[in-house]
Image (cartoon, rainbow, N blue to C red; front, top):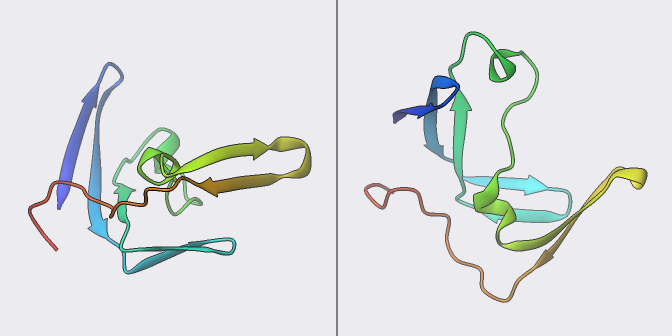
Length: 90
């Protein structure tokens, strides 16, 4: 599915997909929702990053960015709900 996001900076096209699985360090996340940029200019048009870890994942954890040691620490909250997007598909 393609969505168009509109904000004060203009609009941006994203492909929304359901991933089978995502692994970040020792943690595995089943069936997360991913968004991939279709931008042709700006930050999300660069060739390099495959995606961004966003709020839907980070809200499930107490998140600590340990910049001096180059670490991301995720401590899970008790409630772990499925990754939902719009509830209209698999």
